[in-house]
Image (cartoon, helix red, strand yellow):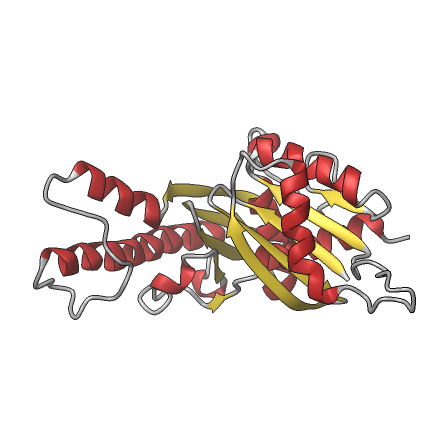
Length: 268
């Protein structure tokens, strides 16, 4: 099996693939203070039920992991992950998405190295699954929009504050406001402060998504209707029903991209 790891600013998502099928997935908090040993304990515990049956003398043969593919937006965690791989998985082929790794995605930016690895991975997966042109909307710590051409090129994108960041900022800066549950209010016109905040958050971000996507699609293609819009990220389910421009929801888009990159870089 292939273990894929997507280290984000807030959460780390892990997925286990059996060939092309994702058979299990986990979401844990990203903690830059965790050491390689602590990370190893966490990964071992998650993989525990996938360990081969023990032999007659009671010893286990080890986890069914034949490869690891990872991307990270947090440099300190990336360092500890590398150390974990070196110490605990020395014989397992590992691909870390970084400059020099074959992704198959031409990055048409002024400085390609500044593009987050996860955004390149998402673009590869979206183009592989749905073809281009397409737009990936990733709702996480930040809300990112990535444009992919008909030829699978990463053209560029947009970055906006994420939903949770905005909620926290509103609650901390507003004297009579507080953090609220990210839930659908009874109506757009809120009948309480909480509902008014929920309305602003839900419909405000849905409107932001539709506005940016429509403008991007118009630049990507002469026929914007041919552009596929793919939503991913932990907060995507919050706005899916309200953002009219989203065509498909792929919660494991980054993990799929990591699998594809692993295959590109390890195939004989």
